[in-house]
Length: 90
Image (tube, rainbow, N blue to C red; front, side, top):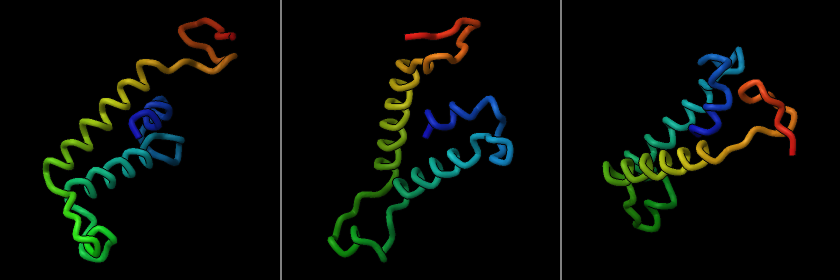
């Protein structure tokens, strides 16, 4: 979600102006679920799996941050988009 938020970052925060608010809310909800668990009305509870807690939340945050950093470090602008005052072509 960090990659999606970075694409809309220049538009500000609020979604009405094309900002990154929605993607930040989704990322927060996903991390909340990783920290607290799915609850008793879930398939995980029926199957007896307990994959939640602070270590799961931390692992999800670290894995997501590492994946986002890798993707942001290797991204390229699409053809025809100005990047640092240059036209990118293939």
